[in-house]
Image (cartoon, rainbow, N blue to C red):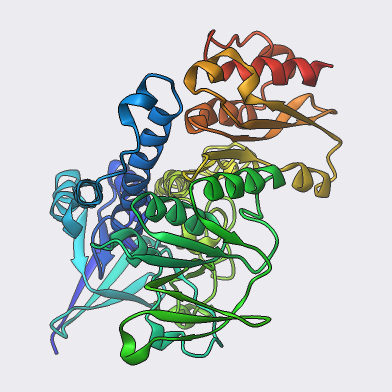
Length: 480
């Protein structure tokens, strides 16, 4: 086994969107930066999550939009999606699961790449185990940044689960064939998005939810409308249902799910969408006094707590602040700025909304769920705001009542909610459900993050006739 030693200013573990953005910022600050990656450069988002899943889901929404309008509805008729064309387009957005383009971007940006599995080996030191068995020892003058992301969690004690070879998000977004029958275990984002996608591609889909709601971390009406939408599309949504065992003969063929309370269900594939865990089990955390497998606790500058010297950072999913690609990239910008400032001997501005504080993670993280119908949310739910001790007013409005929504689709159904802080007179949360609402979300994000007073928002006039006119109705009710 050969071993080499090299010194950099910054070492980044993980070449997903978060790691790429950290490296981009530190290189821009004049710091020699290397990324260590054992899989594809571009990470989960590029190949097994955001890009392929949305490529699967966009045709679903496009066809639904066509069917929602008289004239185009008749042109579409009862035609279904073309699975081969949809999967081919999905493959193109995943770059055929090849990272040549992203590696080229690293090179053009001045970011160095080391292939292999990286582990912390002490203060500002990383060892990299290459595929050929060789070892490289990397040291950092200023910082090491952990951007290793998260992995899907499978239940620990379900008999037959491992032998059933369940899908996770990777198989669900990358399958080259359409299963005849798909069982989805879990009612979170991955579960409802993949249920919508594979149902539209022709699968018979059953969603099994142990609790009593879909999307439980969002406003309750969001999960209710999504359950209605999925059922209207032909998905069988079952609440209060637990899978107690699975059986798949010889590891192939149909899967039989045994359900709590009796009864079974047979499917060709079963997707487990039951949560995420940090990819920290084998990155050497024990070498710096941290527990392997844990989420990494950080301050607002993404500096890891519990490690002396302010040299170890963690950005993206791995710190558990907001498991969203765009928030990881946001944290990367904050982290890169903090590393650059410290390298130059400048103090950090970690005040709320400061240049080195990821304040939006807690106050204004936006999220879109691309299911049927779309769900878009930012900031606090009504329940979370009240739990935080805020004195709030909840304002709801049916989106279909504004002219723009009626023009967008016949019999448009959707709802909007804002959570209004009565003491500061600002909006602290918003949730919108309905076709096309993803493109309304940034206006809500600006209002929440900008803490724009209601008296000023009143002068932000929505164009007529657009769906965004719902903002006028919401503001009217906020003003009373």
